[in-house]
Image (cartoon, rainbow, N blue to C red):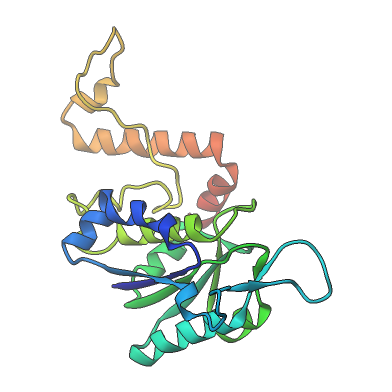
Length: 230
């Protein structure tokens, strides 16, 4: 997979892209990620990428000119499956959406900033809009990293244990069951006996029971959807 990220403040992306799972995936050539500085595409002599909104109001709006030129340049070099714009006024990201994106070959993620981006960009260039929650951030860089991290970890060969991504919360519509590691006794705190039994059937049943209980308590909306589909 190739991911192109367009940002007016690319410095915000350097740390998260170079470390942990995403960083290792890049070094292992499991994913190609390129960050494009939007200011390099501005025709303004001061490399401005924003202007005041028509009709008045507070804040600044990202101008169409640098965005159009950047995306048109990238699109002339290869075909993209999606141009993604993180924005709070969109469908909230979920695991099903992440799974679908992980099957794409090439994607662009456009990071907004300031008050927003010119609507003509959204109308003409953006093909997928994603929210990471009902709140507002200063820019699209952090949502972009949420999308990148959630997608990259699903790519073949990225995780050490091929099954670990399949056991994550939300993959089956439920939250994940509690997990424990060594030592089995810590400060007089133990772990459920079934996990030490070696009985894989009973362990699976225990995990399913705990996942259902946890989901019912913490995410009744997910629990209702899961029960309805059964």
